[in-house]
Image (tube, rainbow, N blue to C red):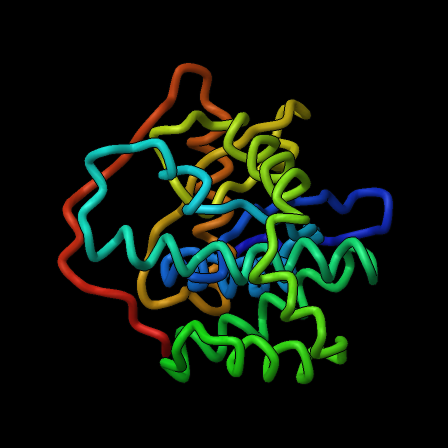
Length: 216
């Protein structure tokens, strides 16, 4: 049995988490972070990044993925609009409602789905209008740049930044995992991720994915 983690208000760390709600892998990682928040002295602070912004100037994007990215502007714009109108603390709540619909329920990325998520999150349905305007793109791009600037543009979402064991801030892409680890398995993965991410000169551990996202 591992040594229990004793947490005080002063000892808790903030994990900044950048997400795009259309990404199923980021969704599973975000649910893992909620487990980590429960089991380790970590508080998650949510931020928006955008796969549409990340890939907008790339010529090698497959056509099917390009269609996904074109539709991807809507939800991130709505998230930025919600945060501007109601405070950044609503981001986690709205992300949960969007993710449940996009991924667990398999609903399409449509205005109807976004309105349902807004309503469930206790937010005004008219925020869905932001999906069809570029009025929030400057703030969207700024949030995206903040996250991707920590890790470089050859990765995607999610990006996590947190104080490491030595007190220095560390940032990384991922982890990419399926299904979402729960309980002590989630806590162990967090401990190990911090360990490798905090190692000077460490960049990558990777293997070929043999399973798709499993929303258990």
